[in-house]
Image 1 (cartoon, one colour):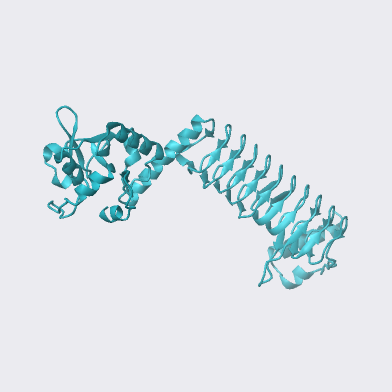
Image 2: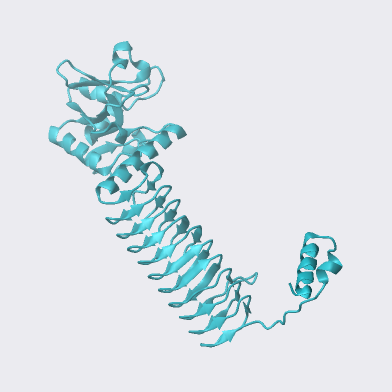
Length: 393
């Protein structure tokens, strides 16, 4: 504190607000009210206090018989009567600079811990005849101190419970508050539905009518009206109105799914724009690509965008139909309305309206199982089937 005061400009003559770094839930509204109370009382110093369920470990606020602030006593220096006091020092102070500077110079280390206590400034001000007040905070959880990971977890849970309740009161349906986590920066419209096991992280925005979850994590995403996102992990993705995502989808940064589009089960996307009404239904990877409107990407399709040195881009037109188990070796362009056959590896551009296939004649080697796997269940089944066919049964 002494070093901080010395760092202030020489012409500064305002108030000094002191906040401990271990009270992360303290909000601007509480501080504004605290400052207003201090200035309204013309006190030389004001202390923020609280009434927690358990005051153990905290400095106590000692008041006179008339209820006026008297002093602060630390837990280790308190007697039994003082330790029974349930009003505690929250560690937040407001001082006039001149009074603070004068009393800091008077501090000593004459206490159990051999340290300078900032709280002693309050006592010095009182002995100097200055007015000091203590203003209780509305809710003790706002000034809960964090000294270990257990307390940090408790504070995070308390904050999340209040955030979730706030959105419920604003018209958001949260089916299971106990398993739902929503960050402070998130914005949810009325009539959004959040299903169990969902985390809304960062600056995610969800528009009205959307259904998120269950078991979904969205970080810094935008979700349009009436979209459905279930069992999905998405970061820095945009999901337009009416689109559906999941289950078990992984949307990496740069994913843009157009209106009424679909990213389905076990699909991964990255730096991909998928146009309005287009679908990537299942078991596919779409990376560094643009897909036009109304196209369908067949199951098991891979956009091979990396050649071992650099990433390359693919352009898939509108109203394209691609077969299952395709590989698009970038850079390629597939024109509007084109088709690709099942199992095709596309290495060259496909003109609009064309069909791309890999021609590889199928060869059947009769009797291969009997010659190479004699006595197996397959051999037995094949032999019986052939016998039945030959007998005409």
